[in-house]
Length: 243
Image (cartoon, rainbow, N blue to C red):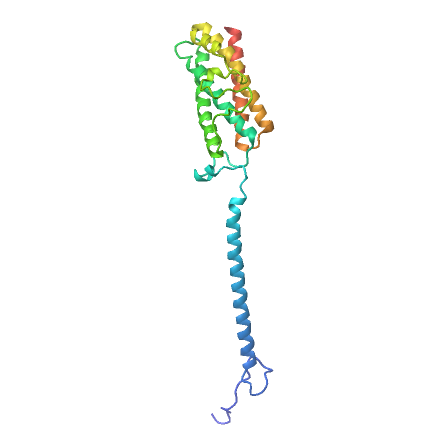
């Protein structure tokens, strides 16, 4: 095309560059910006990785110092969170206490005459046997023994639940022997009387746990013990009034 000057070069987007520069300062600026951006991105990536490593290291540090290594080895703890000596003592004391309640309830079979007594004995066994297993799992996770031999007034070392008369509500050997020898209405009356006292002891221990314990799961079970066993005390009291 005539009159068209093929020698003119369109002005580059970096207008203002010195004549003859061919846009080199602009290209250098772009190149420098890209390098800086890459350095910043690398720095941010390294910082993020470092933070991830830091957070991973914090996972174990966030656990309460009272948590036992066994809890991590066995998976999720059955009683997660912090715990204290009161929680441990509650479990160590309540296990043999519940075990004696199971022994007493088992005597109702073939001895009890009142249908409501039989039903309550079965309810006690159905509730307290799982609670024993639960509290044993806590102690295992906490790295604590099931026996609390150092607890004042509690003889767990004998292996005989009837021999732990120093614990609140626990029956003596003589009381257990009298219950075993009773039948019919005599058994019903003795069973109700003894179980009321036994439950009162459990409630007292559960109330101590709620006041002094730290572990939320243990305190929740203590609350359930109070609720369930008070209801059973009320039922046994009504039974005694009509026997």
